[in-house]
Length: 347
Image (cartoon, rainbow, N blue to C red):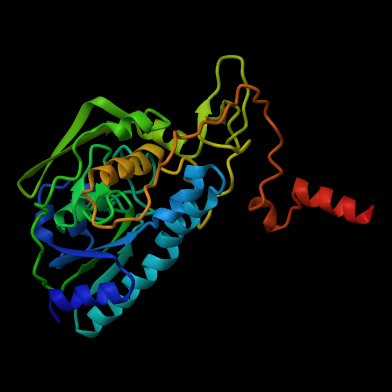
């Protein structure tokens, strides 16, 4: 079995993109992000890309249907579609006598937080010299090393096929496969800064950058405020002095921001899907810019954006009870709407 056969299998199992990197390209990675500690005898990493449908962003762009991106474009790919692909591929690789680990997208038990710091009192190395479990695989770097594209100024991974519109997953294996060259095609990110301007949390710095060296190549992206991203991503913003808010359960200092129509944050879909903002800067604005330049291979008959993006006016915001969430209340507790409907039927 060779690299060509592996790539054909990946596409048969639903991957839109597939690239291969040798494990030595991770030389110099921080210990907590070095996948070689996961499988010391590994020779190859297979990186797969699964497109996010442009249509899954349409409902948010129109402001009328927010759940599809978080379900079908986010959690559904991560927890349903991608695991089936990588697990089935690993079955075939292991039938050839080579160990393979179907990691997919998630490092849910990782020992470091979003800023790269060790979580206090979380885990400790099992032996001297080993990292704290679990290691986190930097998927964007994996995609870069496998030749699938660039890391843009927003820190999003950009492919020549879909721009920022894919989710990446990986397989680590002892099988030695021919690695792909580092991407050297047409420039994708031209630092237009649309991601910076459109980010609802102002989370991407326009002036400060982070630089790393990957396999002899300098790669740079804008410094990211992870806390600001996390809050705006879910549609929240901090209240002003003297204000109260309950947009996010358990916090009395968070209210809805201008990119959410919801009084309280809807429940997660497929565990992690809570992207109320619809990746307004790092994905949608970036995609609009890339499509306008004609650099993406996945082309459409109609342009994605035809009018100025909407903005919700919350100047009249007053905290409300959080009993109206249809997802939470489907677990047993009747929602406000259900109670009202039942009352009308009884009347």
